[in-house]
Image (cartoon, rainbow, N blue to C red; front, top):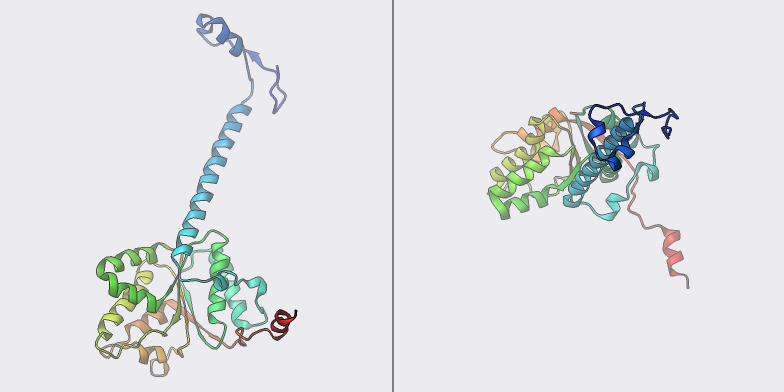
Length: 266
């Protein structure tokens, strides 16, 4: 008898006490491998099983965050493969996504300016999710609305999710109400807590906003919009955590004329 893996001949089993075993058992173990191929195979099988379990765990984690994110089908279909990569901001977005996969990233991006901000963030998100990174995408207005309904319990649960994901994306930052009414202090605190939770755990966030951003506080629309009681803690934290990228892309929201008339054909 030979090993099916390496071809070595089996050797007679000289184990002590084998003669006391029942004959039908002795027949099966009379000759044993002279190599460790079977042990190696079993070890590889165990490693493969562990790898599959880890891959499944990562897949489920990515799905968990994607399912609770505020994203639509258009967001999920946005990829670098269909992007106009001649745009400087898209080149930066791709380099950022690749770097995120290669090293621990603690610096984020704030995309501001023209059309294309959400598309750029979506491309980064999908690139990372397809490679096993957990990405949580939120809309700030809906986040604040959820907190008003669920109060402290809702905030604690959401901040735990925010702290645990690999990347947090806040889309359309600034579309929600400003901080000028009677609830200004409350909203300022909740927005700051959200951003600060990422800062404290040393993890990055990406923000897209229609508001003008400038590191000069006097020229920064975010500073004016989100200051409370004369303080600009929100803007200051963003400056510490995010590198500003101005987007000057062409509109992607126009209806395709050729496709429209093709649909009208009988």
